[in-house]
Image (cartoon, rainbow, N blue to C red; front, side, top):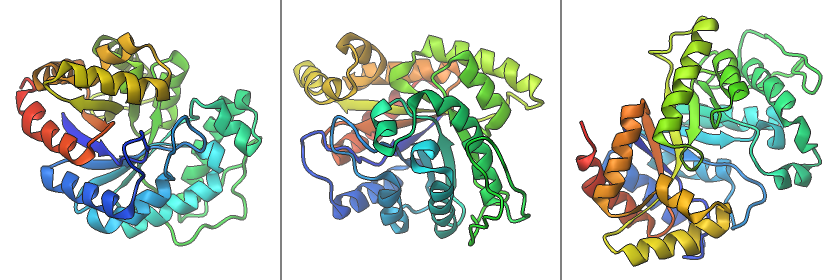
Length: 310
């Protein structure tokens, strides 16, 4: 199991985001040994959220050899053609380091903002995934569906990776989501605050069966766990304050659930949670500090990772 870092796009009230801060964060993550840098997508949220694709493009030159990922991008909200165009540019300018993880998103407010019915998200997602693949191919293959068509559209220049960047599917573990991942995806992305090690292991077991049905090898099919919010501290009061005052109001989940699943508290306790996910078969975890970003990713690598069970 290795580790990625979310680019800190959300203003949790600590300070507004700046280009200098994002560049320094990307450089520090690469220096510390994080294997990937990712961005998440929302249009409208409980807290100010910097645009993900703009932010990722802005820090490309400081990402070193890290892989890049969207965890997740919203092809329905953004539209598959504009999204394909932007992601092709990021893949090209990064030298082919991009993995694209997509999902419908969980916010009805995002859909209302762009005038798309929220109840259509699943049918649209299936088509959007196929449209993205067609738009990235140089061979002229096209897709036509009920909602989207790529006929007559050539988005040049194409991505560095052909026939396109790896395209993963975000799923919290529903049967329909796992079937979609096996049928249409090159990898599976789960959400840390929507699962547990036990639930992840069970979802992975069910996904393996669907992958075999789709003619894919479960042993080589990659996965990752995103949105692992964290605040590492030996001070229990500080951990609880960060959880209750910064994260819980933003995600609107029970504090007890967040405390159980995420990395808030002493380094040893955080390492034990990561060890359980490692045993469950997680291959990469993306962490996301809710405050003191640079210090937190340093503490994670210095104090938590060495304690994760071999």
